[in-house]
Image 1 (cartoon, helix red, strand yellow):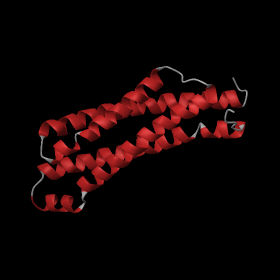
Image 2 (tube, helix red, strand yellow):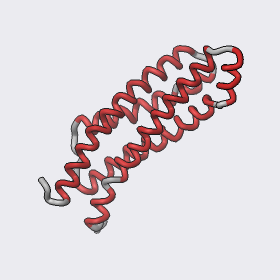
Image 3 (cartoon, rainbow, N blue to C red):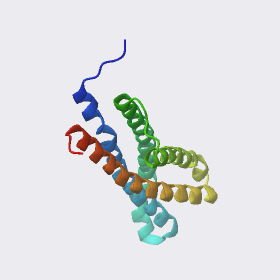
Image 4 (cartoon, helix red, strand yellow):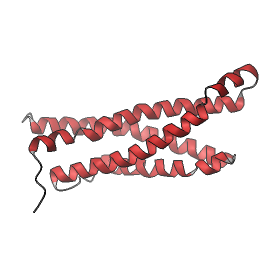
Length: 160
């Protein structure tokens, strides 16, 4: 017997993924800020360096990155699952492909942590390049996601 889900639950469940992802976009920008502060800590000397060290930006960046990794993977899977439950299929297109790419990129970025902790500059530069690319994709995903949400609302309220 197939699982019966009410139309209200189906409709409102479609907003979980976008809300979480907008929060993760904001958190990604904060991760960028903490990463920049880590770079400043590495290249600064004297009292400024002492103040930056007190900010514990390396610990904050690592913790934020862990939260981003977990929530991005779970929210991506949730978005696909809810889409499938509501429509009986996934919509193959740029939003899905970019989202899957972002999920892979954040996993790849996180996998560089042990090498960065050992002082490997190649890992740091790769981590930065991956995350800047992912942030660019994230901004584009946010814009296309808004378009998808608008279509969901129009369809639900018969506005199309």
